[in-house]
Length: 151
Image (spheres, rainbow, N blue to C red):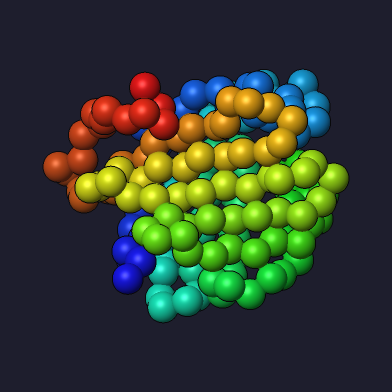
């Protein structure tokens, strides 16, 4: 049974972000802004219905989907494009595949304890984006992690 990802997650770290965005043909100005951001993530996961809110001081992005159902994702607010997207479970990982101008583009989320991991991928580059966010539990939240995804 897949884990319930519901929660509010605070940014901890990321690696390979600039190279990842460059491989996706994101312009230099937007890449520089993105590198300054430390987005939080809020996930509402109810059965097969998931809402992922990526929240930052620059721009917010809301992704709403039903697991296993292909849909048109409007990424114009992020990088000026639309694509066909499907999100499925692979064991305990939520896996997204985006069909468009960049082959084999997508991401996966998984939990390890209170840490939410994000790995972005696409065909044009060997290193994937890795990001770690930690579930916010009020005043007890404190950054700290050890991960292969984001050393």
